[in-house]
Image (cartoon, rainbow, N blue to C red; front, side, top):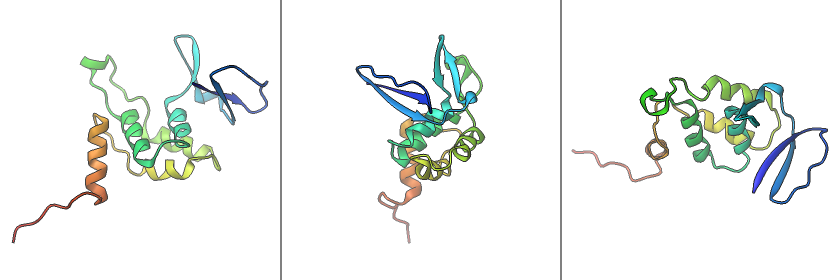
Length: 136
């Protein structure tokens, strides 16, 4: 199944295996990858807030803002910044998933290198897991 965003007012699109979403889409929220127009990383993160949990959004956000290792990834800049994520939140008042995105952005951290690391950090800081027993 493919999910496609069509700008408000664009012609209707009816294709098998394609789910069409009509949304406000700003020009700077679209980029091109291998000749195909796609939404930017930060816009995609915000769109995923409609269906992901807060923890899943944090994992995705951690991945977006992490500083890559040049020797493994061939790049030295993050996919986006916390500021980019905040700007896309601020721009889309009333969008579905916005409340989750606002909660998630408070928990996103630069430096997490894997989904498991992010989830462990969330579990430890939430107090949801067993608490360590102190010595007397």
